[in-house]
Length: 118
Image 1 (cartoon, helix red, strand yellow):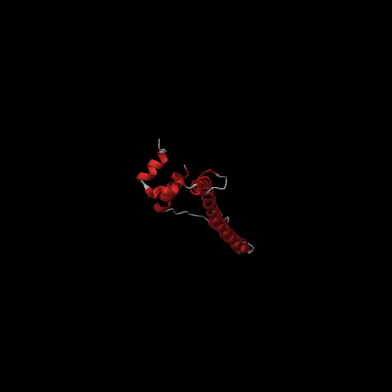
Image 2 (tube, helix red, strand yellow):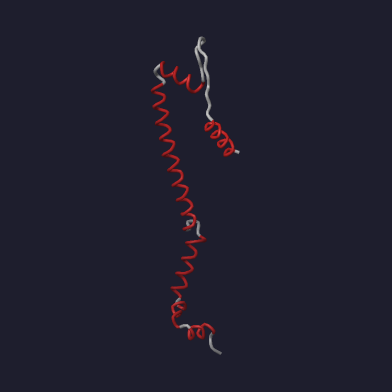
């Protein structure tokens, strides 16, 4: 009785290399390294995505730190402190009245931002 593998190779001679033990070991090793190992390609791909995301976050926070440092330098001057308090916290002097004017676009933006948070 003939070996079924030899019959298969007789029908498809271009698959003869599959019988080579080095090819079998190479295929097993490749599958192991790509999918099953702790240092697999898939794991490295996920880690690279996380690294890229963290680097973009790092750039964003460094820019925010620079903006905050500029604001801190501005707030060393008392005139800028007063201006900041008036604009951000709507503070006023005793003899003044403040009128806050809101536009429809601002209200729509607030509603959209609240909807996105929920």
